[in-house]
Amino acid sequence: MKEDRGAATAEYIVATMAAVGFAGLLIVILRGDEVRGILTDLVRSALTVG
Image 1: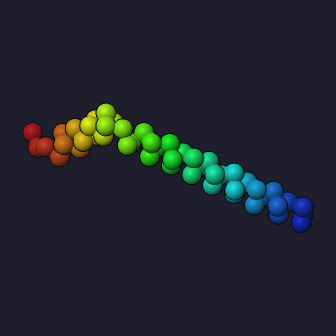
Image 2 (image 1 turned 90 degrees about the vertical axis):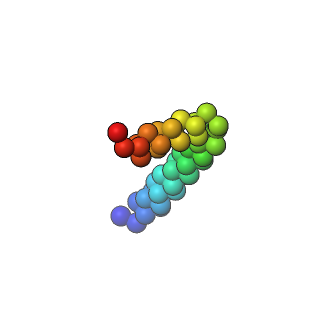
């Protein structure tokens, strides 16, 4: 099935591009001050004992 070889490569490219796009979106979201504050508070509360 030599015809399917290119299709598998194209699927990997599409999956990789989707992952890169998702990572870029996460970076944009996490750079916001409000989100950063929420995450900081979450980590602080998780690390605080009782």
